[in-house]
Length: 451
Image (cartoon, rainbow, N blue to C red; front, top):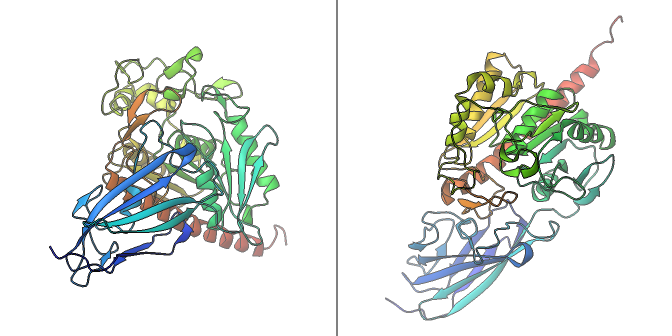
């Protein structure tokens, strides 16, 4: 093996950008065929460190280009410009937080290239969730708990209400990144957020209705457009809100959603039914859910025993009680706008691919007059996230119940789904907001009745 005669040069372009922006990473100044190990180290929330490493072989010109070259060994095994980011694992397995403590601060990653002779080169890249000029404001009005992100530049802007899943809290990273792409994003907490219940049990839909009405009234959305986007239980909730308050929801974006109402599951209050407790109420009345005296379920993964590998088996069992499943079904045909469904075919938390297909089928049978799009990703699991963040969390501890569960997918498949779902969502929102603007303009141009 020919040894290097000069120090390697590590370059990143661009150094600083949004988290969804790919970078070109190149190592030059090497000897032909020289082996170089490149590592990535990122400090994330509350001091958590995430790391990856891969070894590459230089070409005949002494260059390694991650846009072109697959590693010969390491934490990922394909051509991927940002493979060193999505293949990262937590150095401390006790902390799996992906995002910074302060969403307005960038993630900082140090890349190190090291030759077999121990000659090193370092460079840094910065991943931002908020573009310069995006404004962050905490919302504590009308009993609501959330964070509003407003794009730079004059409005009005279309609005997206962002809902988290069964981990609760406020999804600020997604809200900040949406605002960086021109959408006013209202990241709304509905449990496990300051001043709210620590559990999802008996969450009143009236609280979410208040959030939607507040968005329409206070945010002055462009063309009256207010979409709802949610993940997992938030995806179930997004579909439910679209069906329950069709006059307030212009479009639904449902990531790995349920097609039926489920019980409180891993986010449930042990004192109020636990896993089988009521999740949503309206007018103080519990909504029927799939675990409500289900005649077909003989086991579930939250009973205290070690959970099975494929948690979604219990959901197939639950659907066998067809009468209950019909009562618990979300009446998606009442949604009065476009619908985007995003799922992973290897979802092992629940069968989001099946659920999404059930929603598509219901809308088709009802003759839904608006755009319906389903993005279903191979080798992707339940944890479809933002692009160019670590996608290696195949199993983890539930943040509320503390019970371990399996997300499914592969790191590579999840990374592709993260990228594809984000680009697909932006394309969908751009398409339907343009269409909505056109329809608003067309209606405004029509003569008034009686003229």
